[in-house]
Amino acid sequence: MILLTGFLGSGKTTLLNRLLADGVKTAVVINEFGDEPVDQDLLQRQDTPLTVLSGGCLCCQVKGALAPTLKNLRMVWDAAADKPFERVVIETSGVASPEPILDTLLRERWLAGRYRLQAVVTTLAIPAALDQLDRFPEAAAQVAWADRLLLTHADLADAGQQTALAGRLQQLAPATPSDLLRPDAAMPSDLCSGNARSFRLLPADAKPTHEFRSLSLRLTQAPAWTQLEAALLALLAGHPELLRIKGVVYLAGRTEPVAIQAAGQRLYPPGALPPRHEGDLYGRLVFIVSGTSDALAADLATAFGSGADIRAS
Image (cartoon, rainbow, N blue to C red):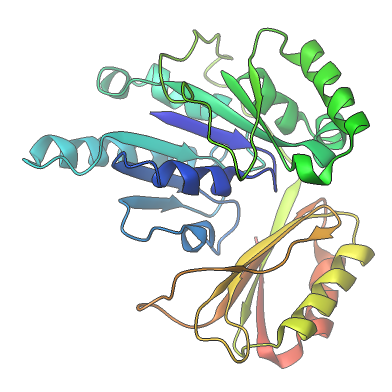
């Protein structure tokens, strides 16, 4: 089992897509913050055993669903003559500390006797990581619990940012190996080998808190990319509390969906996704903010008008 963590926009889903392409049959558990799950639609492979836990972060109400999900996966595996998967990857919400997940995996005897935790892998986007580590204790916790750190978005960072982040990681996690993960380079060969280190967990009744909120936007019409791009850029520029935008959208004039991704103040070009033969053809976007979401909700309603369904969580 691999536990995949990292703050919002650090490249967890991109890494998961690369893991799913390595030929090892994999079951995936995705935790999403908010009530409108979209991460499963960002996967390039749609034939993977997949469970989505939405409606919160794994450090909150969804934590109680993790153990039953893993038990069900194991019972399916035990009953199958042709084993449906060889490993499990849990992708956590970007606003979650890994500790509650580790608590479930290591304190639940039934799970601990049937799953072997290989590694806690944490992704960090170099241009944004220093600010995130300063502002959000969840980002620092993701580094502290990691067995392996993968540094992403190096093409968007300068040498000074890379040096500063290396120095900060040396302070936070001096014994944790880190690797630069480039899209055109192979992943570290030993990423998924071995056993996770021993962990010292907090008391069982400790309850972490957070101040993140999410808004879900469902588009009932297919917008032109120029129109959508302008609206999203305006929202990013006008709302410093807006940390992340992600989703799947059907654009006017295209039959296949595209992935929409933004982190911090950067909106990335839309990425093509495989055609979907099932499900609705509505566009879905999730906006994650730090603090209140009221002002963003008002601007979303203005930007998208009657062609959108907006929900807060």
